[in-house]
Image (cartoon, rainbow, N blue to C red; front, side):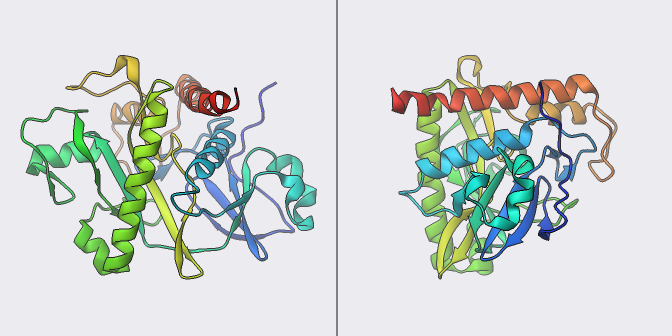
Length: 301
């Protein structure tokens, strides 16, 4: 039996601290409780229809990658097991099962850290226009979806819901959070991407690019939010990869492509999604999870 899709949570005895495009965040002192709903966004706009099971997939994948990257940088995750949460969460344990994380409180930084190993999306558009991505000069003659000689760090601002994130240069990031912290996050982000890309290729997935978020806890940076999910990354099937065109994917690019076929201005309200689009998107997310978690099975065998 398929789980009921959750568009938003309702936990009346918990303190709702905020809502993001996908996650509802509750304060459970001294921690935060992050609940991944089945909402899906595209072009920074939340769609009116949920994708059943998506929140559980995001939670499981993030937990997997946080563990894999813990020696590169600490993360905020304490537990994904509701039986280990504070007692105030007990009435909601069934709803929290599989789609929630108890995390440490950190001060989020006002930038997003994006690493690109391949030329796609807004990076491809920038390259066509200027020969650069976020101020980084790239070799001439690259094609759409080309693998870059080395992964590049291309940060962005964090826009409020309904507004678009804006690409910024490394220098602009330094002006926002400081030079030393920018350098540290760039180094950590590149290290995380390189490890993830190498591991994912063993399961038949190319991680073309990914977005990470960091916060400050005890004056040190830690990973927060989600990590290396189909919401925050472009996942391509390795066996179908061919530079020079858009790629099939295990992420929400399928949804973006559908929306681009409509006469929609990419501003709220978003159009209703047909059931075949919802089902196909859910299928792609599940396939990504199944492939990535092969790494866990491989480690345990």
